[in-house]
Amino acid sequence: MCTYDTETVEIEGSAKGPDGWFGVTRAAVYVDHPHHAPFGHTLNIDFADPARGPAARVAVELTEEAARALVAAIQAALDHAPAGLASRSAPV
Image 1 (cartoon, helix red, strand yellow):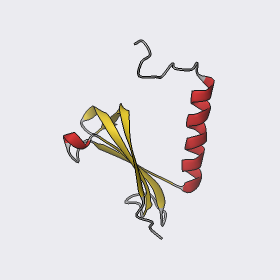
Image 2: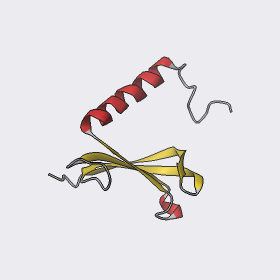
Image 3: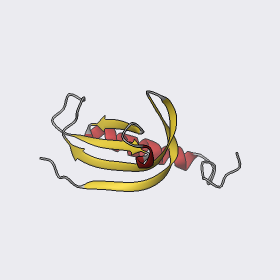
Image 4: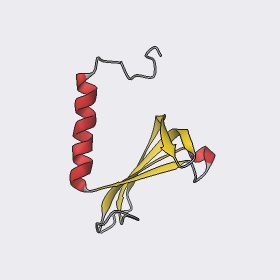
């Protein structure tokens, strides 16, 4: 069942697409039918820079289990790093 509920968040980062690296400013997260993954439904994440058009997009299709494991891994990595190390205000 598709929920058609999409969560979007403004982000700051970079992604690598077929034409190389580009900045990403938005992530969209939703549960829907995948385009490529061999499952009925997946949690899909689109990292994009809408100002650059549809070519500036990287998509990920994950099972529920993989998505939850990714959330836990992200939290653990941030928890183990010194606070603020990956912050936008950290020195380069």
